[in-house]
Image 1: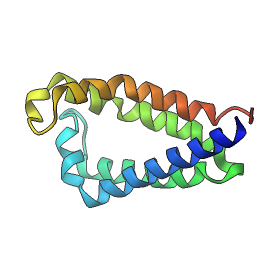
Image 2 (image 1 turned 90 degrees about the vertical axis):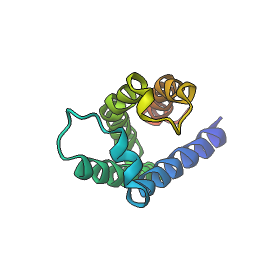
Image 3 (image 1 turned 30 degrees about the horizontal axis):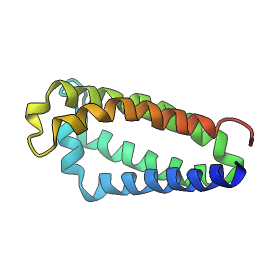
Length: 123
């Protein structure tokens, strides 16, 4: 089980690093999904991307794993309103299949549970 947990931790960390980098490569996508009631859209896109990179890297450092996992959970909860905004406005995203937009909502909780696994001592 330890080996599987370690492999999955690297997959999660690299996924967050890659997603964070994408915020800087393709900010237009993230700007498009920002709920209109939030201020400073571009700043928040870059901030969330930066945090994904930093927290993804921190997750890979054993001494920082727990704090990173908790912070990733907080980040995932913080960006959840953007996912809800997308689900409520699928017509604004004709390039994305609405089923994928709706699937993103429960998948977010799977990723939260995945990150939570790394807040626990090794099993």
